[in-house]
Length: 354
Image 1: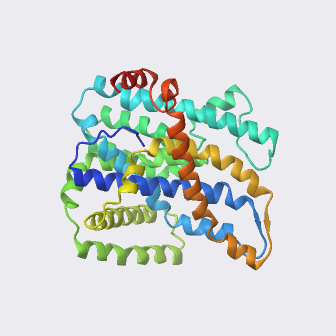
Image 2: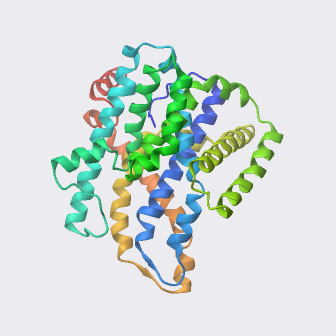
Image 3: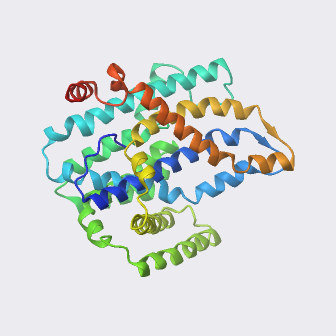
């Protein structure tokens, strides 16, 4: 989720990547709106919270795996061709700075909200310095993705000469991530490295295999995906890592082909523009969702009319949060405050260049 486009692929490839990133960040926002705020209300007539969580869970194998495949894809040249000195500031120090800065901002804001208004609604707040460090090191926060990018980039660059060994090790971690820890986001950090490495070292194959849309491949994956999902449900293996991996591969393939097909006819300019601003949206959107959770915790929807009225609310709120995040970024990203979205030294250099 970088705000500066560093990819070197063809214009058509960039268009597809940015559109996919735009779709992914909206899925992330929608997930956080539905599970972090909307589900805090009481729904006595219809379990809308259960419905929305169940629906969005179906896209869990796509949301972050696609994001990490794209991130690895875009980091391919920096990892395989450029020296460490070229990537240290932009790929490691900048993302590390942003992770620590925004994880701290969000944890402090959440802790203040919980203490001032509703400690039972907003959990996992800071109890002290040790707890704060634990939250950072164990990725126990909502922007763990930035932490993961630093870890994955460093691993892939350090072991670029042994990609198969690294992929094998990361695949083993993916299979056992849930057994290694019960901290949700730390488990994801352990497991999703496989997708980043696959996107990075598999870039030449991805470019060649998806150079053009093949309708038989698209139709085949569209047919196989629901079969795998239904079989997983029936056999109680839907959440098994292997089933999730198969679904991730199918969903990523479908997404690439569908977006490539759509881009042949429409530009998807809005999604592409959003895809180039995923970083600020990612770090800002939870500042809006935490207060939203407090508001929803005071709501009780106990009529059929109210349930029907609320049924599509998460989708609407997702667009509202997205729009407000982009607006806040446009207002904040000025002068010294640019350091909130960039490494301070790089921020000053870019300001001088502008």
